[in-house]
Length: 119
Length: 110
Image (cartoon, rainbow over all chains, first blue to last red; front, side, top):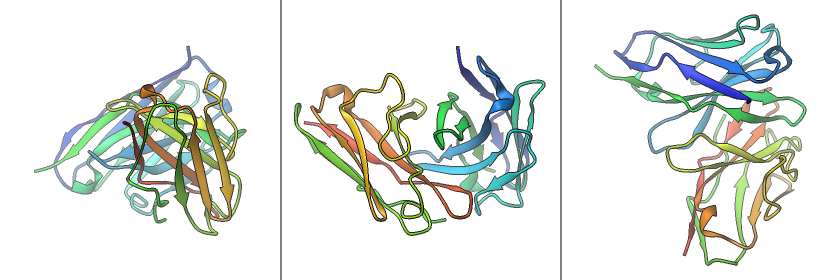
């Protein structure tokens, strides 16, 4: 079945780095844009980043631009989010999601991986 | 990239209809018809329930319907059921080729 599974979350100190991974299965990964959406504890959803099929184009929310880098490996059916210079307000559940441009919506979501930034 | 504006909570009795509003700007909701809605149960990942303002993915109940007027989109849940209790988020594509979400509306069935 169509599935996304995130990994890589954890506790990190302010200023530190973390790399999230998302393993896709059940669909042709290279046929879809992919993105990351995060949700701080008790808060709403915040779009963070997405990238096009081949990764040629990437887009970021202002809150993460310059600190986060999205990438993908189509051969491995994997999406990544390299997070540097982490801050307390980056603490959130990070969801990997498939962005179907045919419907311009995030139609498949992973279960999320938690990132906590604290000293 | 300001979040779309949604009411914090909406409630209704079983069988009633409720409507959740989502207000944006001419740079997002007012820019195109790429408005979507998501349903999130506590501790779970969001689920897509409406895309392109009015369309439902396969398997989503027809009790959920969407609309848009100007810079405000709306989600209506008709025949409210206990199982509809959840938080609902709207989202829109923007003129900057980015996406923006609303803060979420918690629906309570009385």
